Image 1 (cartoon, rainbow, N blue to C red):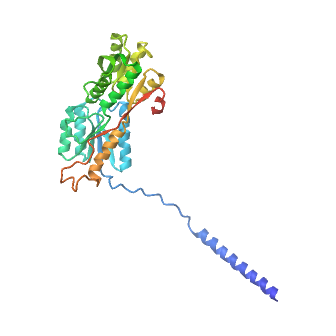
Image 2: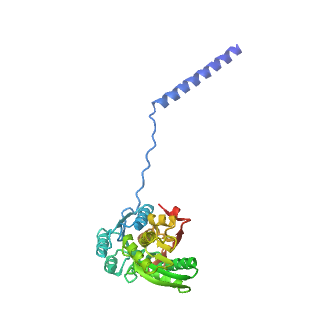
Image 3: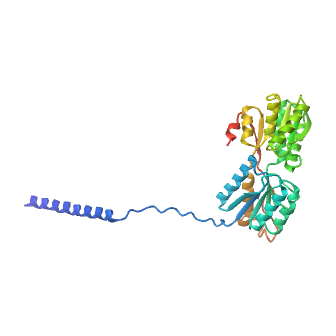
Length: 338
């Protein structure tokens, strides 16, 4: 009798378990499948702020990094950014682009300070309450709030010291650049300062014009005029390309030390091939990036120098940010090619 009761109990338990399992799977089958909701990207509270960079010669590969810097800082801060300006060297068009940025309600403007003719547009923007910071090339005679870029004098000193070491402190050297631009003049002054401690003679400073074709023509003339030239130094973004062309045409590759400035892929390839000995690479994307950060800080940061910076007429931003340079040779050129 006791054994029969045990068997009956086991059967009841098994039956209840079967019913429970059936009910569980039936409910699971009837329940619609759950799908993960697509994440909703929160709108940045700064999304309505617009920051604009204005430059010229925007068809040059050099300005790729400027455009990237503006794009990336926009993503990182959650603000709108634009890059604008003429493809050629037209300062009237640059001034007009600055005025258009003001009219669009820009929270801040980043300007490549090509020359003092831009002072009027820069000062007008600031008078209308739009802060302006210059990058890459400075116009300190304007009312711009700060400059972010290479210390061009220091970059020239660094390049000059490097060339002097390669030449053993003596020889004949020519420089190629756009001497009407303040940043180029500063670089040349830095080179001269470095050479002042040596026996190196600067025999000519040539005009690189505005493109590699003009640079090649000037470089060819210098090579013809000074057959015993030891080094030909490009001081702007397109002169190195022109120097490379001139050296090949004159059959002087490897016979004249050649340098360029900046990181165009074509120039880096010449360095990798040994046609151009080295190029000076600037941290160009950081220029508009840091400039926009400073402009953003003016509007949004709580960091202050006084109890009330505005009431105290205190501008709590750096007046100058040096983004620095690197000298790139054949050994390292490949890693810089995009």
